[in-house]
Image 1 (spheres, helix red, strand yellow):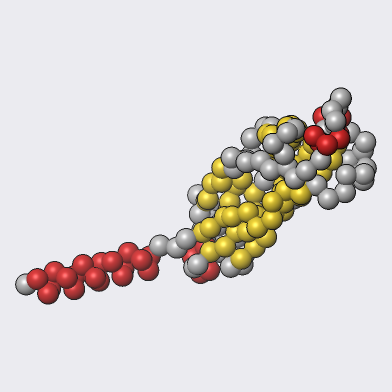
Image 2 (cartoon, rainbow, N blue to C red; image 1 turned 60 degrees about the horizontal axis):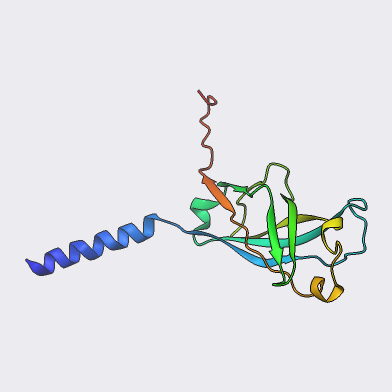
Length: 153
């Protein structure tokens, strides 16, 4: 009797693990401000660029699903001596979303810093250094649309 219960338990566990898939989102490249002297957005802002890696372990079920990213309005980065305020976060797409199309995808995101905030009345030794910060990013996963032959009703 115990052997039968153990077999049923193993079967249920295998069925459970086969029915679910996992989508992971991690930062593959942190925000870096490469060219501080460029004027890509005018003379007021400096653009930092980073990247997410979105990957799935079950392509058949996850391709076509939509992920929406929500960033905070503002943020901060620090080098432990100086704080810099991030004015805005952005992504490649204007609606800050993506549709999963491959097993592993790289999505770029951007941080805008007001140029006047960086070294205002501060010693250059305090301003220099590597800046780090944490951004609470919320992402929502939506199922793919199923359309029948008559259209959506």
